[in-house]
Image (cartoon, rainbow, N blue to C red):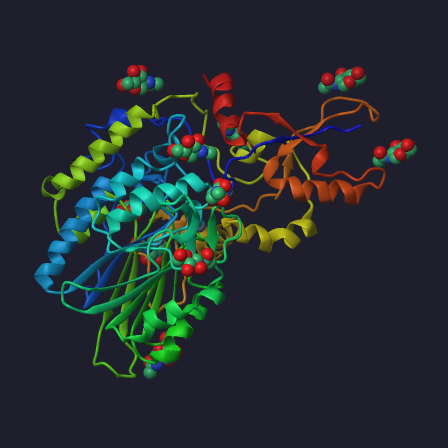
Length: 543
Ligand SMILES: *C1O[C@H](CO)[C@@H](O)[C@H](O)[C@H]1NC(C)=O
Ligand SMILES: *[C@@H]1O[C@H](CO)[C@@H](O)[C@H](O)[C@H]1NC(C)=O
Ligand SMILES: *[C@@H]1O[C@H](CO)[C@@H](O)[C@H](O)[C@H]1NC(C)=O
Ligand SMILES: *[C@@H]1O[C@H](CO)[C@@H](O)[C@H](O)[C@H]1NC(C)=O
Ligand SMILES: *[C@@H]1O[C@H](CO)[C@@H](O)[C@H](O)[C@H]1NC(C)=O
Ligand SMILES: *[C@@H]1O[C@H](CO)[C@@H](O)[C@H](O)[C@H]1NC(C)=O
Ligand SMILES: *[C@@H]1O[C@H](CO)[C@@H](O)[C@H](O)[C@H]1NC(C)=O
Ligand SMILES: *[C@@H]1O[C@H](CO)[C@@H](O)[C@H](O)[C@H]1NC(C)=O
Ligand SMILES: *[C@@H]1O[C@H](CO)[C@@H](O)[C@H](O)[C@H]1NC(C)=O
Ligand SMILES: *[C@@H]1O[C@H](CO)[C@@H](O)[C@H](O)[C@H]1NC(C)=O
Ligand SMILES: [Zn+2]
Ligand SMILES: [Zn+2]
């Protein structure tokens, strides 16, 4: 008889890799000396940004990556800018906008939770990202939208509602996302987490109407509500919000700019305003992407984990004009070399007081959360898709030595997994495609550094820096450790991560008919989360 036991997996949606050898997460060690140019030589961007009437700096899916990527293996140094550096960059860009007498807005498309120790390393009794979000709140964001990672745990949503949204003065948007909270009589009521929409004027006096939309996410916690995008656009409040014509619509949301529901929102606006400029800032699938839904609109998605800062600009024309507008977009690699280049500063005059205080505060948080704890030192880097499986640098090989594929079942459930927030498939497909198109040739030329190479649906080249793509190897969807050395009739327990429980039960019931396995047959194997396993392994094996 087989015993079914689960190993709880914490948010398996965030792709991970382990980087080895040098410089193991000694976050605080760098507090005082790291703000110089990273030890690795970084080349500057090749061309200035195309400033225009409306300019937008865009972040999305930052997932707690606020102290920059600190490893020295490429392309990590490219993403070494921390939130303090970013704050300094934004201040300088605001100053440039003043000098050019144009508008510059700062926008974020959600997923502030789940990803690094700064958000997730809180002590018992704390709330994820409660501390790290205080630093984000210091930046002059014009609009922020809610992401699915704000909704897996009710307490996180509650923290956004009570403590974070108020900092944005009505500009933290959750058009189709509610939270259930007791009113003053203790009676539960469902209310938007932030605001459903915002109307405001830019510094130059331009009227803006904004919404903040979440894609059709299905795995939100009890006490939170996600309304389908197709239902949201039929709401009375939505019709009223878009009725008046602004100078431009700023549609922000945690929803990919292609292959999802932006056209529902776009078409609803276009039905009322056929020519009003529409700027869309999306997110969620962690890729760099851009598309124009028509000639007077552009949609930008700016990657993930502070590996990308997006820039979008638009030249406005007369109201009622039907001509195509001139847009530009650029994907910046967030590091001080990039920031200083575009902010027209040098290292000595780049840092602002706000930027320095944010860097200092985040380094202090890293110390408080004990993030410099070294579990062990890996002999080399282990990656998921950059090394073939199996191989001695494959993270999957590190976990297990033998693979088992179950393919149809996986495809059947893909759609459901997407609804629950699984985006790695889209992100990896993007990596596979860029490697296939450019990988061999560009890496062989050896005159480019590793990084993202974007081919999107907007005109011209979007990447700020020309890179050679990372190698990409496909990996099996499931791996299993070798079975213990037993004879055929020895009973063995089956231990698996709880994220695949439904799939696993389905497979077990498909491969044999003697017994119908149900949820009731599954017990918890250990309190240790799957996400903690590597740390425990490193303590034993790499110390
Ligand atoms: C990423 O950016 C740096 C400069 O910003 C550039 O040298 C290089 O092209 C990329 N660097 C790495 C470090 O891959
Ligand atoms: C949620 O927060 C409340 C109050 O801060 C706390 O009492 C409760 O234990 C938390 N619940 C969970 C599941 O963390
Ligand atoms: C969200 O909250 C508003 C305001 O309380 C309420 O009218 C609406 O029905 C709620 N929407 C959903 C989908 O729960
Ligand atoms: C109010 O809603 C919360 C969150 O869903 C729930 O835990 C609680 O039981 C509800 N209280 C009542 C009285 O229905
Ligand atoms: C206007 O933009 C649309 C969408 O990008 C494009 O299909 C069309 O060819 C453009 N028209 C002109 C005249 O450039
Ligand atoms: C982490 O930082 C603390 C406080 O500065 C220090 O006591 C400790 O030795 C450091 N640990 C490691 C592993 O570097
Ligand atoms: C990994 O395998 C390659 C090829 O078999 C070998 O050259 C290399 O030394 C190995 N590296 C490690 C860290 O074992
Ligand atoms: C890199 O090398 C290739 C092949 O030699 C050449 O065509 C290309 O222009 C070079 N690119 C840069 C940025 O130097
Ligand atoms: C597996 O078990 C068989 C039979 O007991 C034994 O001969 C063999 O050495 C074992 N192999 C390993 C790798 O332990
Ligand atoms: C199914 O049950 C029969 C009879 O008890 C047994 O001989 C057989 O090994 C079982 N098969 C599996 C796959 O458990
Ligand atoms: Zn995300
Ligand atoms: Zn997301």
